[in-house]
Image 1 (cartoon, rainbow, N blue to C red):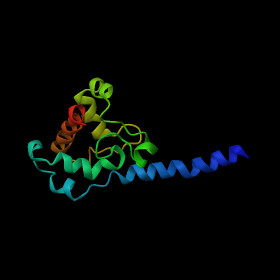
Image 2: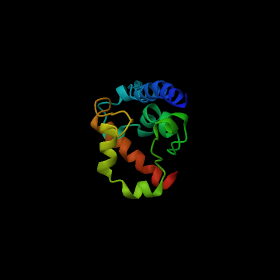
Image 3: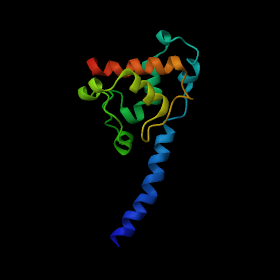
Length: 126
């Protein structure tokens, strides 16, 4: 009986998590509007709000329901900030580790660069 409950839960939970993660990947109006902006003119805070907040939260701590479901990274974690290289952050945004959606085809290179710098801002200010 217990295994049937676990199996039923997994049949519901796994597609639900995938649906939630894929929902984070749809480009919003700001993403489309800023596609051709140089990195220093991109509204990285706005991009974060449009694409990342659902899992990572406004403050980057990943204390959201979606964040909990998918195991989103707490971007304010001092050890993670110290250990993660800029290249790793850029790659994570582009390719989407684990269940995080990949933004390499949804954001322009300048938007990805600006967003990676914004992620670093959680190191000292959040």
